[in-house]
Structure formats: structure tokens, C-alpha cells
Length: 105
Image 1 (cartoon, one colour):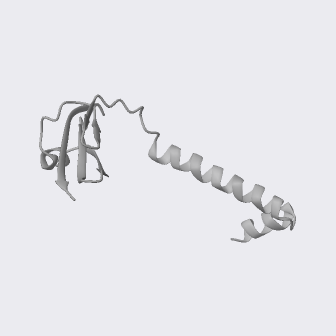
Image 2: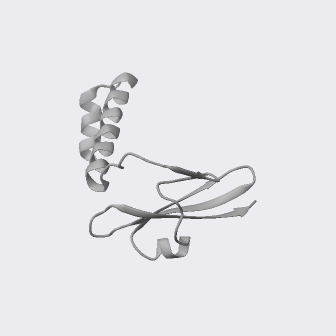
């Protein structure tokens, strides 16, 4: 906290200097999160089912998908709320199967 205060004091008292300093802090946080969590691979959806954009023809249940390595997300339309899932091979990191489940809203 003292380092931040000292940096603000060095940067000057103007709002432009504070903005530049805080912008640098935000950029550093973003770069750090990319290193820690990795970057997302390019999306390659082939099958549009409800609001789920899946890579493969759905071939397993969402429960089966979630039981191993997977990527899960939720989406909704005006009439449906869906759970979408891609099965991931834990050792290679490759996605191998897709699943989805929707309920009427």
C-alpha cells in the first residue's frame, strides 16, 4: 500500500497522472492473469444447438461431461436456459465430445 501511495505521490496530483498510473496497474493485472490462467484457445463451434455453440455433435449427457475434465458454460434465449459442456482429454488437453441440456424458461 505504501508503494502505491509513493507512486501516486511521484506521479503528481493531477487526475491524468493518477489515471495513467491506475491504467498501468490494470494492464499489469491483466498480464499477470494471462500468465497464471493461460489464454483461451480459439473457439471453433461447429454445431449451433439452442444457444450452445458446440464443437462436436452432442454425444454424452451434461452429467457425464462434468464428471471428468471439461469446460462448462451457461447461456439463455428468450425461451430456454441451457447448460453447455465440452469434454476434455485430461492428458492431452484436446476436446473430444460435446453435451448440452436446456430447460424452458
